[in-house]
Length: 123
Image 1 (cartoon, rainbow, N blue to C red):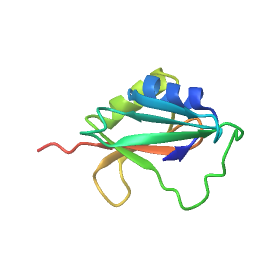
Image 2 (image 1 turned 180 degrees about the vertical axis):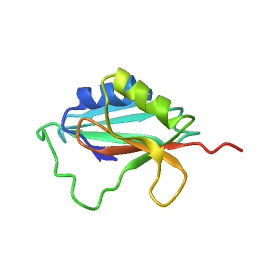
Image 3 (image 1 turned 135 degrees about the vertical axis):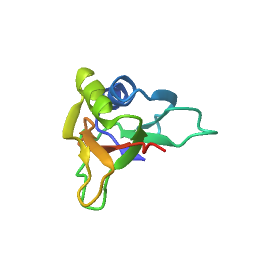
Image 4 (image 1 turned 180 degrees about the horizontal axis):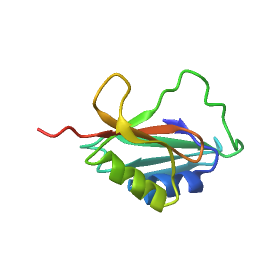
């Protein structure tokens, strides 16, 4: 679960930039928050990301305990180019990870959360 300051902006990023689908969205007026679930497939068969928008909070301190979300991709270079073409921010271009050979890249969502693209290894 990620707390987001502007749900529409975050949904646009995760759906339009990263290609996820909005799976469900529920408003809780008594609690003044909305939950939105996004992912690449149904919740029954795939991991999904819960976005929580507290209506009266526009931004959060990310703290030092959060690391990043990791998404496996076919081609990290292509994923970075697609992210940039859709208006996303690439913070570390695709290349080998430090002390290894796995190709990785990082992008950032509108709230500053880091998302790592990990290139699938070929057999």
